[in-house]
Image (cartoon, rainbow, N blue to C red):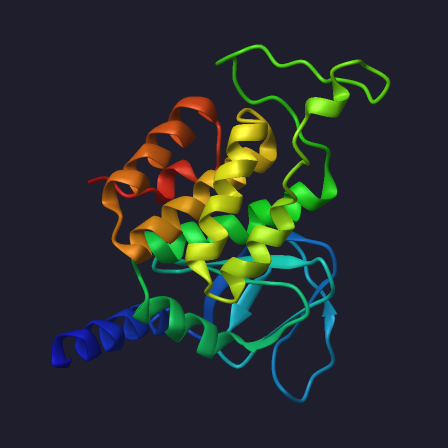
Length: 221
């Protein structure tokens, strides 16, 4: 415990050395606002906007903001939230590992998926869509909605969420939903201690989505 506490203190001191500015906004989607102190009014956020430890960030529905701290750690604020910048930074310092980084990437990827249609990300196999008037349509299984699996994940019902994410991957392995499902499954199987299953999805994500923004946050062992 003493070692962990010392690491957090050193992490916080590292960012505090840069005056009151402890980070900047690296990326955001939707409606994001920032105020420099509790007594000031919120204003629309901008890319590369510096944030101070006295500041606050607020996100609207279907919105997200990623903050890059001066020590290189990142944090993500998800939709419909209001957070104190200093507290957000302290939480990042206390949870500086690959799972934290991947969770941040997943939050951004989830919002991006909502805002754009799925697209092919590799050439592992040919895929064809079957129209409703086709003679083959009646044999198709119902398509798994990834949002159902995400809701279970958010409730920490990992054992129930995993097979749904697996079905998302199976039904369309080269679509953007599959990229997101792989990332969630890596988090789930690591939490459940199923390392072989986790590594299977690390390999699939790396192979099928070589341009994924999550790749620099994956476990290396």
